[in-house]
Image 1 (cartoon, rainbow, N blue to C red):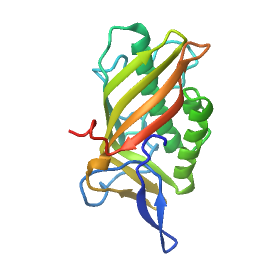
Image 2 (spheres, rainbow, N blue to C red):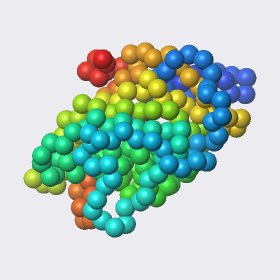
Image 3 (cartoon, one colour):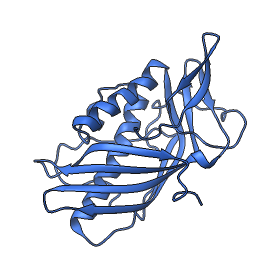
Image 4 (cartoon, rainbow, N blue to C red):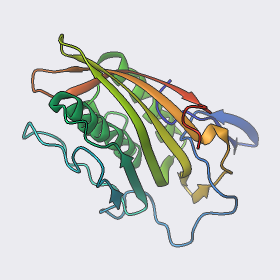
Length: 220
């Protein structure tokens, strides 16, 4: 499964269709007034003071990832003190942002996320993004990531397990613009297991992502 794979029920052409779109848990009610199409405004907010790095360093060709104003992140990923582990955390943070921006851009072949994904990870993520594109949907709200556990091997591979709180994040349909809000449930808390490898540029790229909704380990 690819990140934010919580299924949502939505009406399409008079039928109820199961969509594997963004995991969106939040209070009931309609979307906030004044929101435009995701990506129309640049400069989204972030809370990354505890992250290993608010902006990735390394190769000069890293994609610039700027979130729209209606999308924000909190990464409660403190430094480990280990150079390689901190690099895994930083690159994983960027990979998450890159996938979200591909959804915002409505582009399943967006170069930003392809910089951070390879092989099975890239193929699955492309399908995940395309599902949004097909249904003219994006994402909005606030995402929080926490409880990272990272391990690095001498052979240039690594693993990362972390939690995501989707309680204040929502699917945003674009035509017409509509924010689909849902209640916070156990499924709003998702655990992810990723495998990575360091490529020739020194970037930790995602090889595979497995997720589980409603993780007891991630619930408050």
